[in-house]
Image 1: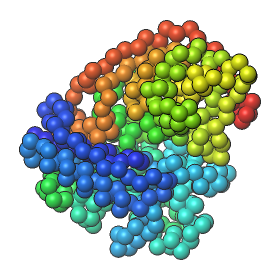
Image 2: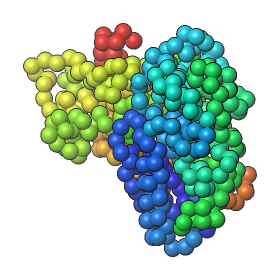
Image 3: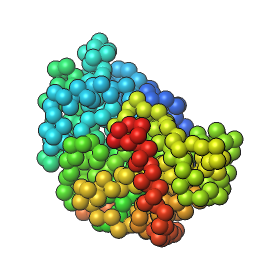
Image 4: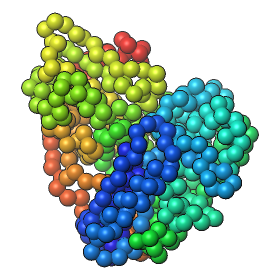
Amino acid sequence: MLVLGIDSSTQSTKALVVDADDGEVVAEAKASHPDGTEVNPAAWWDAAQSAIAEAVQKAPGRVEAVSVGGQQHGMVALDEQGEVVRDALLWNDTRSAPQAEALVERHGAKELATRTGLRPVASFTITKLAWLAQNEPANADRVAQVLLPHDWVGWKLAGQPERTWTDHGDASGTGYYSPTTGEWLPDLLADALGGRSPKLPTILGPGEKAAVATLPGIEGATIGVGTGDNMAAALGLGLEPGDVVVSLGTSGAVFAPAEQPSADQTGTVAGFCDATGRYLPLVCTLNAARVLSSTAQMLDTDLEGLSRLALSAEPGAGGLSLLPYLEGERTPNLPEATGTLTGLTGANMTPQNLARAAVEGMLCGMADAIEALRDTGADVRRVLLIGGAARSEAVQAIAPGLFGVDVDIPEPAEYVALGAAKQAAWAHSGAAAPPAWEVAGTRREVGDDTTGPAVRAAYARARNQVHGI
């Protein structure tokens, strides 16, 4: 049986046709999304149709089920006719930072963390809705329903039926959902939207069938409930207790499976649910792979050249530390921050040291995230390193020492789309658990570098010097 996994990410739609028996990818395609922090969802649908059509055309048989993993937190506001009210505000849009702080002041960080698993920051859907109410009240008045990106794409695959749906994983990133009860918190939604109470999608269980596809090429296929991108990646990787994922894409995400919900009132750890009925405490940074690509551009080289430069420098980059907050930052919560390079001297101003500082700065942020997960009780036995920046030789070599544990590097793959495909197979089969597909090609880097603590200490001093934290 063939199943289709969709990853509707910030940058593109990836479509994988997968053999449900063993998880082998038999066809794939990709279509780009426009840049920006607000996007018309129609662009996602155009890309999804293109990628799906190409992947299905290459497939050696009929697709029986499909599911969507999508970028978390994006605000898709619909009117009474199901039309998009305005361009969707994405997770990396930081304009709602003042509204996030106002929510904390009004309700209290502890109360919000206890109820929602989250302390609001500009990434979350609830803050974007609060921004909409305050800055575009006429648009806010038109909002009849609020969806997340994966909800909207899945709904379009089904031909826009009367019912909309979501899953517990993606719902847990909104700020108006309770991981403890598994239910929406409509009072918080109405509070954010100035008393308005739009409809919310039905929350389905992780292995449930949501609808039937009407899109040409996959007509009649079972549609799984879908989930957020991080939850889909966790499902695709088949995480076990003790596993921690460090995902280095447009954003950086560090997450681990858990049996109990978490409630961190500092906002460092987001208390998400996963796509299996468990929980997925997660730390997210706005800056990851782009730190490397931007530094490479500055040094007039490519990513391979940046890696060679970084590996030719000594650990600690000759005293340089880069705070890589190029796009503002979510963790720590510094939405207006910019990047800072500290420790410059006439002796250490070399391309090699700057390249090393970029890699170390990005990875120090991830190491801090691992420590934050430990503080919530997570068992950290190994790190699985995935995402575009995980392919860098410098990242692979430097990460184990900074993380302080062994680092496993699975074969590069579209793990979000694979997780979505696994969920599609689960929904179609009606089984009690998702299929167990082996993760191929894992290679281990041993965390025995003794220079890591000194590098992290220098990074912490720089952060305290510039931002007081």
